[in-house]
Length: 507
Image (cartoon, rainbow, N blue to C red; front, top):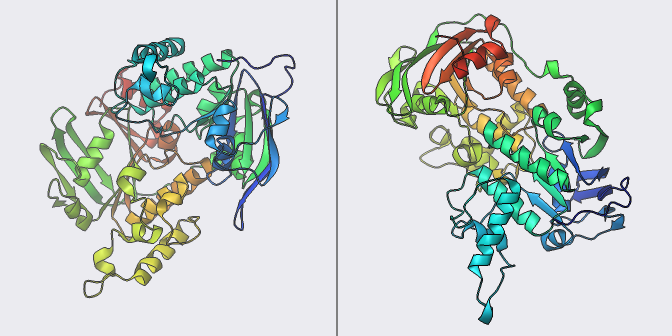
C-alpha cells in the first residue's frame, strides 16, 4: 500500500468540506464537513436518513456534491465515477459485497488488472501469488483459488479489502461491515482494520453498534437530518452523549418496557425437536408478556421460532395457540391461528424489494382486501397508509419499491405487514439489527405497546441491552437446548452470558 505523504501530519488525508446534495426537493446532505487523517479510524454515525449513505456515495464517485468540495492531500478532487474514486485511492467496502460468484477469489481481486504472459494470456500463477501475498499481509487464510460462490459475508469483505489494497487505496470506507457478522468474524475484521490503520490508511467506519465504535475508532463525526452535528475524539464522548446528539434524547429512554400483569397462556411449545438442530424445547408465553430468546450465534434460537411458525419442519413436539394444537410445517395454519413472524433477514425473507411499499404491507391481507377475487390498488394503499402512519414510516410514495427505503423503514414495513393481521402472538427475530438507534427506540416502543394491548411477544435478540431492557423473562439457549429461564428481576448480562456459555447456570 502506498503510504500517505507525512510531511504535514496535521493535514487531513481526505477532507470533506461543506458538501451538500439534494435529490429533487429533498436535501439529503447540507453543509457537512469533517477530516479523515492517515493512520486513523474515523466513525460516521447517525440515524437512518441522517445522510451517511449520501456521503459514502460521494466518496465512492456515485454522487457528485451539489456544493462544497472533497480534498485529497490538500487539493480538490473531482470524483465523477467509481473509477475516479478508485484511481484517487478511495475504496468502499459495503455491507453486502458484490463479487463475481463464478470466478475465483484471486480472479475477483485482479479483475481488470490481470498480469499477462506472452500472447496476452493471463498469468494465473501470478494472479494467485498476488492474492496469496495479500491475504498473508492481512493475516487471513483464504485459498486464492477457491470460487467466490459460497464464501461467508465476512470472507467476502476480506476479499474486497484485499482488492482495495491491491489498488493502493489510501482511504477505505467500511459501510456497516459488521451487520451480518458473528463476534469472532467482527474481531477478525477489526484486526485487519487495525493493520490497515498501522500502514497509514485513513478508515471511515459506519456502524450502529456503539461498542464497536468505541473499540475501533479514534474520532467520531455525528450527523442528524442531513447536517453535521459534531466531530470529536472518541475519548471525549460517552455513548449516552453520542445518542443524545444523534436523536435528541438520552440512552436510558431508548427502552420502552412497561410493567404489566401477564394474562392467560397464549402460546405453548412442548418438546419441540429437530434432529441436529434443537432438542426438547418447551416454553409458554402469556398475553401481555415479552419473552426473549437469548444465546450465542448458532444456539438454535432462530431455528426454533421458524419451526414454531411452520417455516421449518420439526421432528417432535407440538405448538398450541390458545390451547389449540397447531398443524406442523404450515405457515398458513400459523397465520390463521394468530401468529405473526418478523424474520431475521428482512430483505431476503420479509420483503419483495422490487414490489411497492403498499403491496408489501398488504401481502398478508390479500384475501381480506379482495372483492370478487380482485385486489384493488386503492384498498392496498389505504391499508398501507394507515399502518405506515402508525409506525412513523418515512417514504415518498406508497407506490415506490420498498427496496428504496432505508433499513429502518424497511423493518417498519415488515412490521406493518404482520401487524395488519392483528396477531395474538408476535415473533420478532433480531427486530433491530442493522437499524439506527432512533428507529430502535421506535421499535421498542411499539413492542411495549403491543404487549400492553395483550399481544404475546417472542423476541429473538443477540443484543443483551435490548434483551435486558425489554423482556419480562429471558429464555437462554445453548447448543440447541433451552438451558435457563431468568425472570426480569434476576436478568443481568452476567447471568445471561453464564447460561449461554455453560458457565454454571442450570435450567
